[in-house]
Length: 265
Image 1 (cartoon, rainbow, N blue to C red):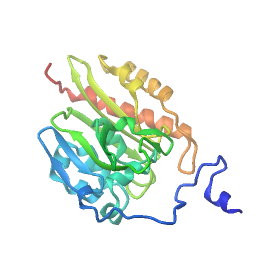
Image 2 (image 1 turned 90 degrees about the horizontal axis):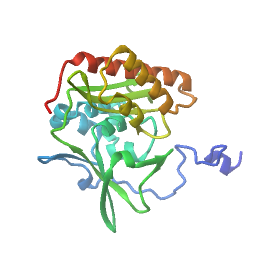
Image 3 (image 1 turned 135 degrees about the horizontal axis):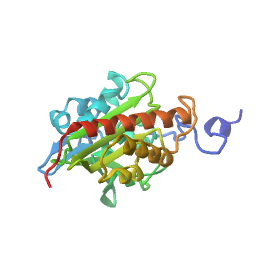
């Protein structure tokens, strides 16, 4: 096997895990990337914050519990002590643990380079399979999450060989609120169902303003199955992923229907 075949897949894309650069720079010692800070409107998590930092932060545990939960099952304790939120995002795996929570919490991402900084909705950051909006010489500086917008129902499930220390076969996050018997607000995001971590806008649109009857829930599951594009790989099959995703959506919507919680106009 020649060097090119060792480094690349049959379709020409580089294999994950293969280091093509011979000079690497560690960002571990850059203190500006590590803090977790709170203002009146935003919680800012530095890209260098570890999953242990996230899991142990009291504000995140109270206001962003889905992110705290995702941090708790990202690898083993040793991985959580060293692995960072920025690394999880920039690695751009469709199966990453933190993105579904970040997506339903409507996170924004801050990018920095010698030319300055820019900020964008996180849902626009992933452009395709392992492709991101990062420009050459640009780094992720921080993730910003809005405060004071928590919804009554929050949901996050990961299906894998194990809950932690395993890459997800499927993961689904959802937040929502009911009003006057119908869905007032809903946001749904998934991992391992598309070529990127993704919000599911078609599924969300099929639910807004609707009463969550059994028939409506099943209709939303059909929309989800049309919207996602799971694949067969070493961890699972596309058909299994699709069926589990529909089951998770059904579970989330049943929780919404049973919540009895409404937001004021």
